[in-house]
Image (cartoon, rainbow, N blue to C red; front, side):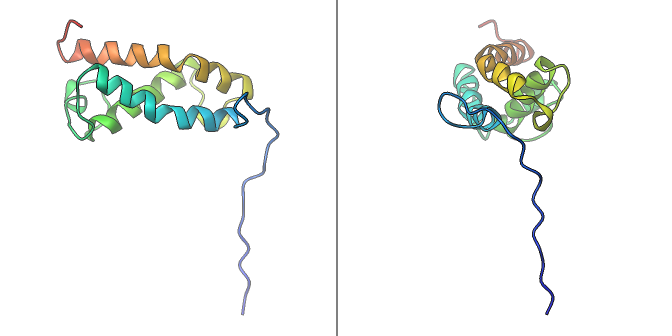
Length: 118
């Protein structure tokens, strides 16, 4: 009988945030509530498809998925094209601190694409 060993990615040292969580986890954990806020601001349902049809290149999924894609792109642009797994602690903390402003940018872009004025 052969034994299978699980391979885990190497652990990198990181500073803990004030809440005691790693910054990238904090950024990932905060994205869902921020996406919900954007949808609430726009008065759109999570399962709807208005955002996907708005022509913003967010894919053909639900509003929740489309806004998440757009917000992730905004975070990547904020960090000069780096993916989340490649962020330094400082970059992740900066993205976390600016997540609400990045979401406001996404919200405004969606609102414009949907032909809304506010």
